[in-house]
Length: 356
Image 1 (cartoon, helix red, strand yellow):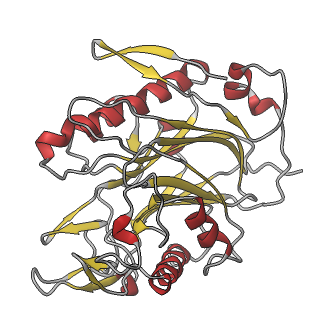
Image 2: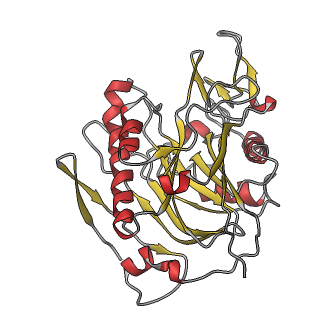
């Protein structure tokens, strides 16, 4: 079923195409609007009694398998490429990604928003065959028109979150913009019985110049806010969380726009405990370009936020001093690192947990 909603924004119409509806339950003859906004009348029993939810956002730095997809430009990550992306390197990367997630807190994170993942094969191997194989994660992901095949995904613990439906929101192109990653939207029920709306974003990079590429990131921001506005028509106090790599700091236009529309940063200017001043470092400058933005209704449940800069995720920065994220490739030179981004972690607490 397909639905289009026109929303006036900044004197132009932003078109929502949410879209190709995916219900996780086979219930025939229900209307789109009923499923999308009123599924809270269905009660799902939870076995978990934990009162806290831990959310992690992580850019994996090109988590590709080593097989060619003829429909994508993934030639860089093949065994015969300049990067020599072999099976052993691929499996090391999977285990390093799992190790990164497991190190984010003493408890297993309930959610992990992943950026720069290639396809379902990668997510299956990560959740079923890597160090995470006994962690019990399920996942949802996009299948975007991005030319390289880069996508986003949400890992979640079924004991903490029960998805009701999910959507992929395709971002229409503006002049000069290449096809980019879809926005992943997931609606589900958390341990309190409340409904949580999660958006996972990977905005276009600043390659080519921050000013020149700014309209591309603004296009993504407008479609995020349009989708949230649509939700708020039906549930003004909805619990909303938007996470991902925005390729923009809190001072940049696209993030300021999202904040002006009512979202709040749940992890503003967060640091680590082992030398990280933010979650990304470029030419010696620490920047926070990965964010967890939430509605005011969800912000009141925030307990803490931080950058996970466990020592194994860092290396010495011999050029600029201090430390930097221990990445997988330095240019085309392979090193057995983890990612060029550090995870952003936010812990929420909910007092009234639903039992059955």
